[in-house]
Length: 349
Length: 278
Image (cartoon, rainbow over all chains, first blue to last red; front, side, top):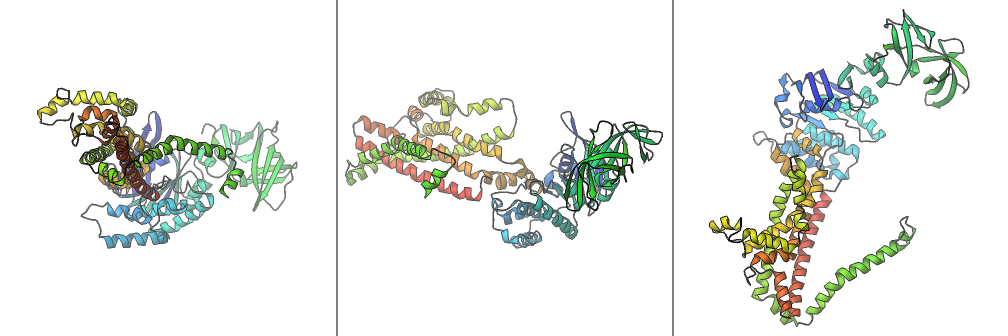
């Protein structure tokens, strides 16, 4: 099933939660809406679900006007951050709810409903909990039940609002992988909202990066990470070093001193140089375009993270760099730095 | 063992507060009740049985408990609707209505009784049109019922209100996204979640109505066997210096109330295990 969102505008008072948003989701996709809080991602999801209404714009589900229908008629599965399970019902009845409230004409008989619920509980691997109440489950289990409940109505699309936001880091990680494998099994067109870039990059086929009610970039996880379209995306996804530079006539200067890098067609004027922490090459003093003193080194896993105070006159600019551990850095050492891969964006971005 | 644990607790003062609690509850509640029971022992079992099975006593108890039950039921339904409107909608005067709910709490019951009697008397604002329809409210059991509804309503509203406020709007949205219409959402999702609070509100309104005296006696007419409530019968017996008779009726009321509250409590406990607060 496809989803198409056209020119959606939604205002809360004078605050534009969504500012002319266009989005197309293809059949069977697992799409992530990624952005900081207040970026409008949850509002967009709720509008698609029919839980909120836009001030202007169109929502088409399978080329059919979705705004003409309320949430209960859209046949859209929705999973809430805080599960929203019915606490007076057993796990079984929670999952069965969507089947039991169907109009009499299409409602299945009891045996079919039971079989279907059993099947779904098997799918989320929690059939052994069917007689428990939600309060007796862990957070991760509750969210899996919430997912089973949403899938019970055989939704045309599945929407998940920060589905793992309330869980601890380890459970989160497990559920991420589980969601991805579940999606490849059932293949329902899905959108999930997250503020966690790692989650978005790891789970989704495509990532939509949002900020201040606008879409900044749409692309595969690789594209948004390696080729960020805007300064916001570069800063939001992955850890970046940001340095204020001046571009003039193809040369790049930091604090008046020229850097030995190409402007790559960046327009002249005040700009920002973005470099990933691990894209900054560390060499012996005098070998690169930047120089600095190592102030502090922390080593963990395959990398060492060094705090380097740049010798840009006052030594006030301190950046963090991830270096491989093949050469141990020492605090106090003077090193030179050379960006291997970088992007330059105009400063007003 | 438990005292040893309490001593090592980071909250000092267990001994003092526990002692005060027990002493206070004994003086304020248990001692008067014990006195009540002791007084009835002045009667032989036959006398006791004679008093409580006399026609007038039985009728008074029936009126008190029966009408209280009905009034609590009406309060349960109306109170829930009022809570819904107060919590879910924003309308002009909402805070005023919210405050009005508390009036029966604050009003001296005699004042309420006089006001209701005026209103429902044959020439009162509501009494006159009702009389034309052939319905007589003041000085009949209907009057008692109305007084009981009046004093019971805040108990239901104030018990259910915070629970409905806490009820997550998300569960309604979840129900809607699963295809439930309003009817299903209200009767399968919202009301069942409120059951423990509804039971508490009902029990409180009921208990208050059983014990109500001031507002009822003005409007009741107090005809023996017809519109005489049990608390009034107790007062009458006392004024006749038949103290043992009075306490016998009181003991029956006490036991009946206790049984009913106990039953509601069990029901509530049962509902609570199924619907924990969080």
